[in-house]
Length: 75
Image (cartoon, rainbow, N blue to C red; front, side, top):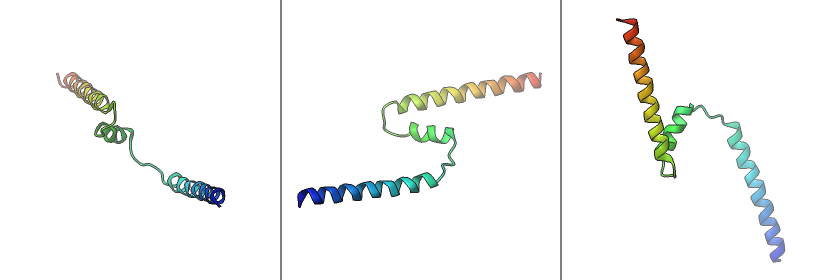
């Protein structure tokens, strides 16, 4: 009886796992890479602070580049 219950339970878990996997694959993620990184940066997982810092550095570099471009266009 114990083996039978284990086998039935395993088959049930595999079936439920397959159903759950189908549901997630049919939904497409519309988040941009920036949004995904922002979510990651706000989490508590290891390395999240490094992601946030790199985003800050990239933003600073982009802002500096924009200032340089605008200064060259309007001397």
